[in-house]
Image 1 (spheres, rainbow, N blue to C red):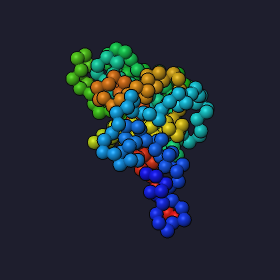
Image 2: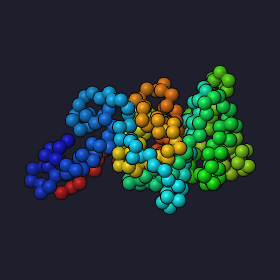
Image 3: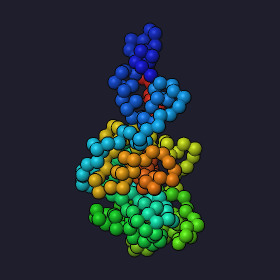
Image 4: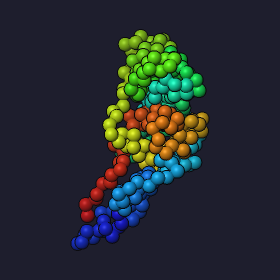
Length: 254
């Protein structure tokens, strides 16, 4: 993947300039950069997965700093064990040049019931003068079952308690969408976050301490405790930021 190799014979200019190739390479997680750029067969093990995320992505902002047209989404990762439940509030602009702002997070260090989870999420919204009705998209994980204290958590149960806590009839509440999970879906979602991070199109408020830590230290292990809140944020970002070029490039005709 060099400008020379992207310059077909007889063309006046290459399909991709050196700057475009370098920008594309920077957007890729280091773990897979060699495979995509150098045709390597093996991934590179790094200290963390989201190599595009750094201090410049962490900035204080207010809701009025977010451009008009951004959608609000809440991403939720269900957890039965202590400290596993997580919700993340995100605002994002759609499109190929989409942007995302991670506004706040709702977590707990102990076991929680679905009712407590609903209260925690509504409290998170109210901290910013928002109501349930202001959220455009709700994205929740698959049902979690067989916990030691709580037997099951699901999108349906959480939706019922959100309606009760928000004081709304159940039929006026939005469906909580379950993210599409497929082989490689985690890597694809993290690649999206890495692309946005490397382009400085992901802004995380300093108050989101656990999400920031997850971005800084996650190495890919499925049982890593930081994965829960990272998944919650990923679900919301994936839902509202579509059309972003992730893991592929456009070839421009000469």
